[in-house]
Length: 581
Image 1: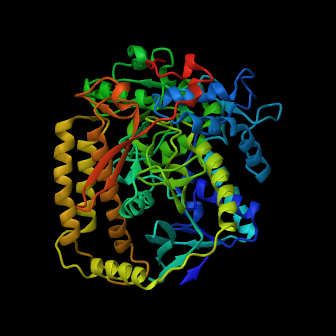
Image 2: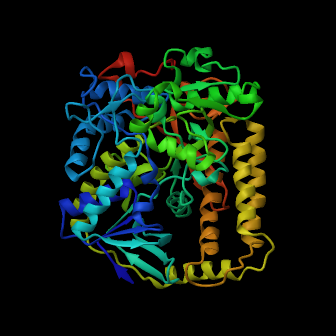
Image 3: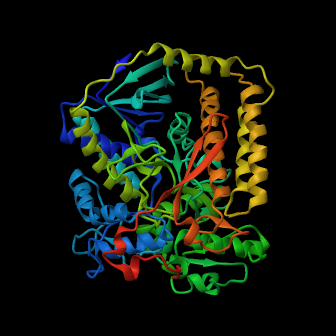
């Protein structure tokens, strides 16, 4: 059995910033960062557009409260306002902190950090490093972790959360390189495992975004919160699904339908903001254009046109978007518009936590030794819909905050008592059972069927009948996974087929919670749109959804109140009202 004072699971922005905060605040603690990919390969590195903060470098009348209002309004008033206050108030400080760590932000002519407009934001407050912002930040965080001696377990896959006697005591992890399985105990465990985009068949997320931390939490009997709110980014490059950053629309790109119209003007809800309306609204508008036959040549996509920006601006402000179009489709956006349609991008829901990142159980009681941060967590600062450039901000603000909390927490408690034998045996038996199964279904067959099922039954538009049908069909796929799987590769090391089979369990678990939560929310709010309940219902559903696995293996749902504390400070703006732009 291995031992560390703190285990951080996930090497992206939230995990790396938390690990760095622990090392900065309590260098005596022995910290391990576990990632199933090299930390630099974490999906955070793909974040393009920027990170929001009211620095006032461009719009000097901006302030944190306006940023908070934009965030709460963008969330369709489901965000917890006390968490949003922390996010937006701390934003300028963490940007300066990142700069001091070495992050190379793009600059204005006078040397100050540049800021661009983003969808749903009143002011130009999104700081950026061209269109490679996540790359710029993550590299510096990981470099600083290495400098401070944090132990990295790269290409280790956590397969079980050890949660006993009401306390989290460690994890069981599998080394992809050697096939070794180890119990690792710790005073505190932080999950920063990212999102679950691979639940769907078209996503901007990388192949590692399989919702592992969410699955492990649910399998431990703890709830997941607001999982019905899945963000579809409006501009996934068609047909591959790879993201074309919102930075492109922030720099002035047009969305154009098959009639040559900038169609955002045709929808009253987005007429003022046009291409810079929030993502849920923009995605629905694109989907409606396609369904009405107004896609390009009647096809399932519209155009994102930047030709009017000119070659120099495209090369200096959005070079990566151009590179992606050329690399994947052979289209140079300097000369031709890019084909786009909505693609699954972000998870607003996740593991419910306190403001200090401590995971909460069904009764809103903090779980000793267990923390979460980043996209896998749900504070909730995004509510029913996240504004662009707030996700990197959440990772950095709350990664730092949770790391500081863990540094204090771990100092004040001893290593837990733990018998590793039953946990080691359980995981080894599960792995061997997968390897030895003699069924007929290959991993990719079940995974593709499942992803198609989620896309068809729980996509941008939903209704009770399709959700119920989806949940019924989900049980058949779960049975195929349990009883009919077949792996060709039986080797113990670098067995990518085995890794895919393990990830498939995460996808199936998370997908079922998403669908059950969507069925229970009988209203339309933010990214959750029900054709059979077309309006928002604050009286019955201004509440967070809790979804958790019951003993029968299916999902049960409950609710939790939403914090509305900013209403007392500014009732005119923060009282829930009709959302218009």
